[in-house]
Image 1 (spheres, rainbow, N blue to C red):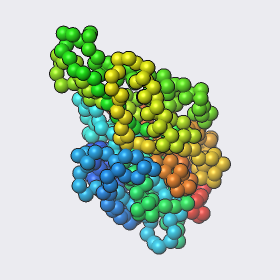
Image 2: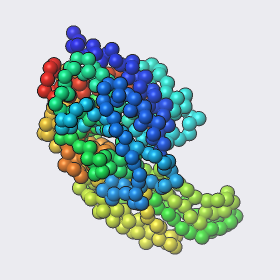
Image 3: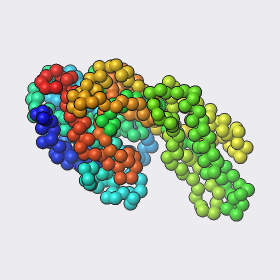
Image 4: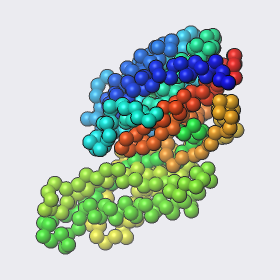
Amino acid sequence: MELPLDDAIARHAETVFAFLEDLVAADSVLGREQGAMEAFERGAQSVGLTTRRMPFVPGPLEDARAGIAPSPEKITADRFQVFATSPGDGPLHLLLNGHLDVVPAQNPELWTNGPFNPTRREGRLYGRGALDMKSGFAVGLLALHALRDVETDLFRGRRIGFVAVIEEECTGNGVLRTLSENGIAAPEVVVLEPTDLGLLLGGVGVLWVDIKVITSAGHANVAGQSVNAVDLGLRLVEGLRAWSASLRQSDPEPELGSNTDPYAVNLGKVDAGDWTSSSPATATFGIRLGYPRGWSADLAEARVRAAVRDLFKRDPDFRIEPVVTLTGFRAEGYLIDRKTPLVQDLMAAHVAAHGEPPHSYMSGSTTDARIYLNNFGIPAVCYGATGANMHGIDEYVELDSIVQAARTLTRFIIMRFGQGRS
């Protein structure tokens, strides 16, 4: 038999799915996040939260604790983040967190219905950001809708907050600014990232670099006699992959479980050449590298630069040492203790909602939870919906998983605010 709480969740599910469609329809790639922020404002106000816009004007290099600021040409004016909270003057007792920036929708013609045309099929909602992580805002708002029906006085005397940030996908500067500039903090934080209804407890370090390879250009008819910057760069990438693989032995991370490539080197972008019949003189490779949780960002940068220098010295085809430039993430690894009350009680709430414990894990990526935990000592854990094709073509979220995640979140919030049903 369902509890009244679950009945309330079911009643509001369709309203929240429509809200999620509005979020997905907003093309909130880097620098264009305002439309999604406005949609979140409307949704937050619909559950009785008050909202405040926080201007986001990046500095020249940002704060090295998070990441190097994106290129100014990618940024539009008047960017802002949004903080929503239950009314009153009491202390902020719990914070929900989510990011509204999404990665670019590469090759939109390959999507079945287009990346920013939210489409429902077979119980799923498709679209860029439907899973990562606009689904989290649907989970949070669905929980708050239901609690507003069932526990009318739940937040009296102590407030709950819900913060929507940007630049999670490239720096982490968004959540850093909410803390260092706006003072948006609480004793505990639930980051509503998609986790397949599991608890994501930590992640490896992540570094973004551009590596520029420089050679002499040449005519295509003597291509076999000249050194091609792209060919050299690809050798460099393979060398870095071999170096990265060696870290599995030198710096093992037991919490990563069966992950066979925890410190993956991803070649995300290549910029090279200006003429098909010319051998390119330069090539720039945009690379994302994972690194061990025990390293600082400074150490990771030094190790990467040393690895590139070693590869340069060992390959006689290199004439000029490649140039390594930091471009985004300087994200250090993180891991919350499983014994913290936040983790234990969120697990208990999941058991109360679903009858069995959730899986818990550490990932070979990163989230904004690291900044709360590493830089401010605030316990933070990720919990959220299920789906597939994150950062890929035809990304989707399972709509029922939003309902299931909200069942856990409502019980956890009631547990935290100490009133009513379990």
